[in-house]
Image 1 (cartoon, rainbow, N blue to C red):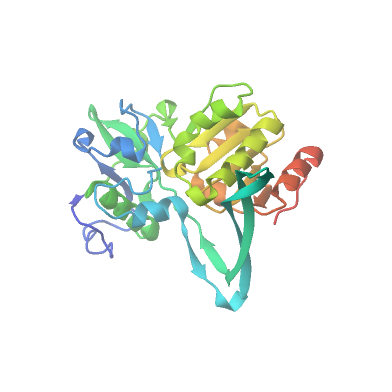
Image 2: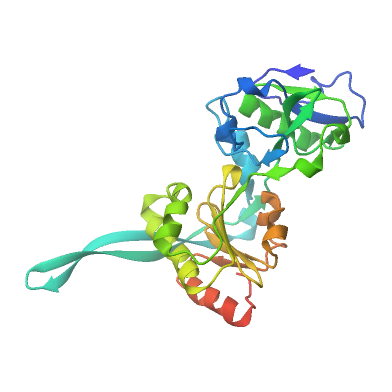
Length: 318
């Protein structure tokens, strides 16, 4: 069954002849006809086993609502919980007097706070896409299989995700195990940089695709945090997010992994995991408050808290 719509609101109209409990796979075939596969996050080769979280706004249409929710999640305003304080950093340029009629342009980084109604986060579904082989041809399927009537909300979201990305999707009724060889799985969400301590100017060039996504008014502040961690502490591995993980820069140390979130959350996340364990996490798991061992917000005390982390390997969450 193929669905050609902009969006569906009710599953019942599409699944009239499907029995409750049927395992369902969402897919698209003849994938060479889609010109947005690299934008989604797949490589030029489109190798079997590639798996990626779709980049926000990578669909064939003009809308990005579903890919944004899939990657970032959302929130519910909770006025009953009162207000919460949020922080953000901005950079300002000014001319500083140097004497003898000379001035020099300097950049100040300031931290601001504001009050807003408390928000209850809705975790992103984090549905990933992968390339598999079916009857000698490459197809793209969702990373999850769904049981009709049991997983309806996630099933509807995934169908709408495919419709936003490809303007169509096909419903398959086959056993997922017959389609996938997990030994060929190649997740493409992270780019690992060359090993060894890297000078900041060289690292900055590698991170150019990430830094260019941040707002100009906060880019210097973002660069200062990444440079501080890179220059002060010796990471065994540095990596950055691609596709739907764009906006993250990570440093792997012996005791933990630090993830700097430049776009989402305005915070530094600390995980008690090595790189191999961390790379397997979905975006939903990364944003799960019960999974990270610490969260350092981007305020005036972030540097001291990072320093405490290395000195004590112990940091209270904020």
